[in-house]
Image 1 (tube, rainbow, N blue to C red):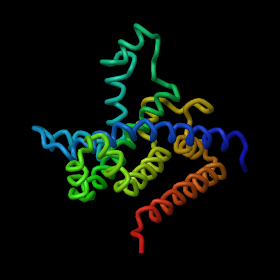
Image 2 (image 1 turned 30 degrees about the horizontal axis):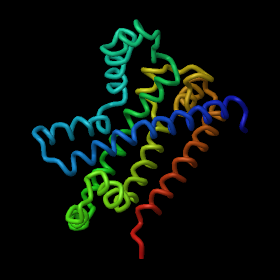
Image 3 (image 1 turned 30 degrees about the vertical axis):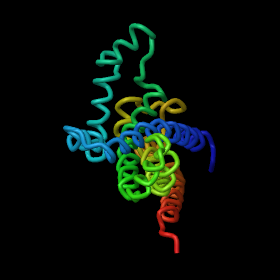
Length: 222
């Protein structure tokens, strides 16, 4: 059951999804905190842009990534000319694609979690002389932790199932960039229903397990 055709995309999917989620977490949480505590011009527009990957078609996201980070992209050309680095058709490119797709899930969950924190507790800490950094780590973050963990796990599940952006940026190279979703696509294209069924069953079990954990995390304490 777990031969190379199954084990390779499974391990690669886990590697890419974990790295993508980790890459998305810090900027998503930081930006969510800023959007929650500061009212600045264009905040609604910034919020819409940061949430955009949640609603755009994955292929459009892949196109944007290529425009920015591709070999001839705005940033990608500089990276290629000065460092010889190119994300196209690499597992690093798959990580970037999955991180972009997972980002808004962490961001929206983090913002909702921070908005749910009692402002009176934060103000009490300010009257006691705590800095904003101390308030964040000692008051806001612990109180918002359940919501943050739920968002992170949802992002992990979403990164594991990413297909369109990954296909455009990293391609579908067995053993190199072929994740579980891409392996299912290839198996069906080759009319190998047995392999496709096995891959679908495994990824479904993993994602359902994550969703069960999320439900337990966000369930109110009785």
